[in-house]
Length: 223
Length: 80
Image (cartoon, each protein chain N blue to C red):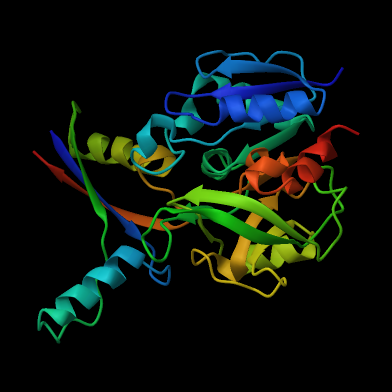
């Protein structure tokens, strides 16, 4: 059975949704408190959404120094799979495990809605079950989701197929949601073992939630 | 010793809060404002041998935690 560790900081609020979604995919899930210094043996680490440390200073900036993060950095360095969702994405960029940074949304609103995203690259574990150009429906809920990276960094992302998904409309046309550079909604590292995105795949896993597209994404970590 | 760290978005990185505030000022009749940049000020009370040592330490703090140098610049003022 595949094993997953889901991190929990003070202010995390998506750990149980994430646990539920991963259990549905057959994962044995353990929630790990931020004060732990070791990760359990696992095939995947998820840094879930929420408001770690109340988003004080900058979203993710304090969580990034929690004791467990040293273990996550070592795990990632050895090639272990790490997925950051929403606040988890912010924490991973603050930690330098993913390139770029997440700024306040351009319109200064907390944007909470069902959103379409387009798959840009699928030559990675996470999106291997999705097609390039495929439009997925996954909810977003964030105030600091405005992805920034400088021109040089953006070139690197493109060169290495590191852009995972972009915000778009129902037909897949580019759509400005929060001001992100080139509508980027998620990226991975160069080695393609660390992933981060603002949309919440764990909230799109049953028809009653309005979409099941998150299953297709999360299932990438099963095979 | 007191240290004041000012953190603001880098030149060229769009500041949405500053932009909204500039629009608000404009609608209040302050037509001469070309740009508004909003940052934050972090005031530290710390112990240090001298100003130089304090500055060195606060620089380290800024690089590691207080600013995200991917998007932000900072300046430091040390007060006795």
